[in-house]
Image (cartoon, rainbow, N blue to C red; front, side, top):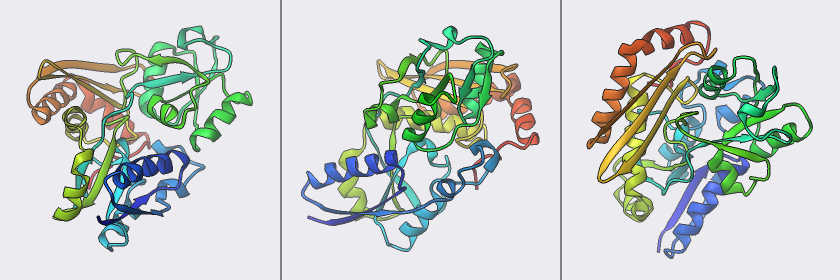
Length: 311
């Protein structure tokens, strides 16, 4: 039996995730304590995330608590973790993945195609915005911040005709009543790591690594490693218009990658299969750069969107 202290953000979804991991650890006989830590991303609520550009905006303060040994492990949405961790940290486990797809939520409309001309859609994700605009350039995309309840409440009050959220978060919180369409990855490529949880610890903390090792899912590790390798190759963080979705089949990995301009006028896609997750991710990333992804990303950064969340 061990005492394990978990660091987590205080949002409804983050707390669900932390309690989920706590329950699994307690089932192993451990004593678990939870420390709620407010991050930079939690403090900045009136600006679209893509305009913030702060490296590790949802992780920095939690990592400081790890370094100071106030907590032993952190539970993150994997898509919030920079692809290159700061020195002194490692991902000890990547949990079994929830649905990685995006969900179309609406009170009145059945899917993206059913939206009327000029409909108002809420999302603060440049990745989602770009793919929506490519499908429906007539739509009006508006920034949408706040926790899941806040976003759904704004939808129900009529502020938006539809909003796009991660299916995983809605499933975990059992708030799927307004989901009208789970969007296929070939229509809207998800964010790298979406739907998976990353368990972060101090590098070299062998005791904690051994205690949380049972949480690591081999398939989730392989697919998200591949997706994050693509993201890293493109120099992008979680707020840039890059999508990555990997699946395992027959011992091989199939990766779909995407780079798009936020206005939807340029959308680049590449699909490839391979055996090595990192090599496959880097190869698809390199191909996307050669296809013109480098120009798109330079335009995005030059227009004042988020800088890559890299050291």
